[in-house]
Length: 415
Image 1 (spheres, rainbow, N blue to C red):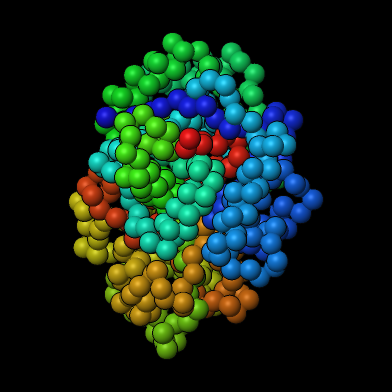
Image 2: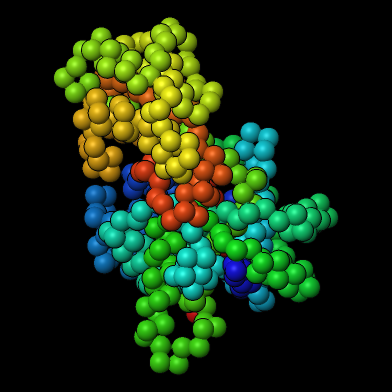
């Protein structure tokens, strides 16, 4: 059963919230972070991308970079740009994108839940990326950024959340530069906090939607701290980590598409001929085509869009992995025809989040950078849950959640 724990959050004052809040560390590189932080001393990027305050070109994994994160966190606290709540609360964090709003419960998840598999994952993590985030957590002694969890929707929780957001003014309420709205409430009534914790305890499992490396790092640092504390009793803050929990029926996964640099020595005609063995191939013309159903793909080649429909028998709808369109495309096109067997390491392929639109696929092919592009129908939340429940792992670059959580609205300290 899932643990949801209230905590004393470290938060910005209301007048600085929109300036402190930043995009997550892993959606922009160092150069982009420098540009985004230019002229804004308050942005959390100074802590989660601290290399921006050191010489250009510095290796972001050097000890002095992590040390800078700790120094900057101390600066933010001393200047009052982040201050700690004097009581333990839960929080509500809502995001609005294209007229849709999703409401998440902010509270601490349990290290034990992660280690025992109550918190379920659907992606593999890389040890180097885990260690990077572990170093950041160790030196700041905090979860600076939340992870993005989903849980099976509970009507009674929905009612409580709806009552709070309809009856109170948000603590923070702003629209970020990307046009997405961010809204944040305190849940400060003890009876309401207790009820939410009680309802959450009846949920059999939660699911990592976005932030697998941050989740693993937080849990592993908590495990380390236990081992190093002879007086450990299980109630310490390091036994918990910061998460925003969204009901699964409010979340939308958008498509995650592929672009490939060459045709593996084939001509366009040869590629189309080989595709026809496993797909019904229809040439559509120059107008952008977005797949409208599972097992239908879009391909952009030589200035034209094609509809590819996988033939019966080429997929297994009874297998949580075999049913995925990323599995079908990888097996029947990328590996079988184009010779790309390892999506994690092959430099001939790149991935484009659907938030950029299919026009981005066209642009990258038309520019000559890429030779062919494939667009996929988005994975559903139910598919993600089925895979996590079965203990399977999704192929790389399968899910893209949008909008991303803003970092800096609340921080969880481990002491």
